[in-house]
Length: 358
Image (spheres, rainbow, N blue to C red):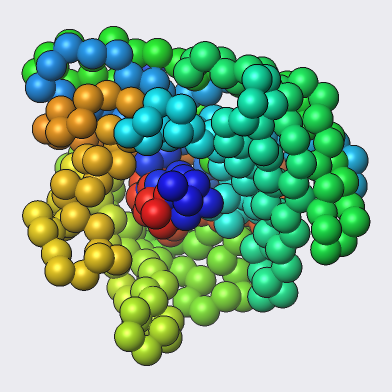
């Protein structure tokens, strides 16, 4: 099994939601006009299965594998895949933010089972820009893994192409979640693994336009907004890649959010059925179907094959009002979760994981 093709593509389609704050509250408790800081986003994966079982929640792993040396990064996300033979094991540790292209560089660590406590390890480092730079470091990695916790002892990887080297060390643990039969159950995610919060401001203007900090100077940098009852509708241009011509076009897209306004805080939420818009079957092997989506989720969460009957993303995005006399410090690499929706990132993450695992 080619884990480089089997795992890194499913990693880019499922990723982020959860919040304890109730969405009931004073709707229209304040005007949305003004400057807002995107302060948090939480995503849950809600699964319904045919039978009672335990899921391994890769969206909420804790701990980290530290990469030090010529490259430095903390890998906080753990995914593993098993084949028909239980000894056929592939483990991925990765930087979720980089893998989604939010940062300049992505890091993907791959471990395969070897003799005793050693296995073959690879660290693939890629630039998220037009340079197409990639470095592949390899070597023996000393680790233990009990399908819940991965412990990596101090191990060295080196690149044959660049002669650069790194050390790996650390521990990551997956969350286990009990799923009763025929009962929608939440798998929470650690949103900070996929997005850096507090770097993006969005300004809602009186003329029903909005602009996000990172959009300035790029194409059509504004969109429009409208509040209808408890729904906020956002219309903006989205990039669409033509699979035939490989050209990028811009299409007006409207996103609808449930809307709650607490005056100095606004919470937007969505419920997305992961099978909505996916075909039941397809002759195109590169097109994702609903059944393949369920199979990906089953493989990544290690629930029984053909047991998932429904999968939904529950998405909440929080904004904090910025006082008129306060200037927010914005990162140049920030991006708005309104314009490039986090649920779409999660779907992209899963799809990329699908391609890597092939």
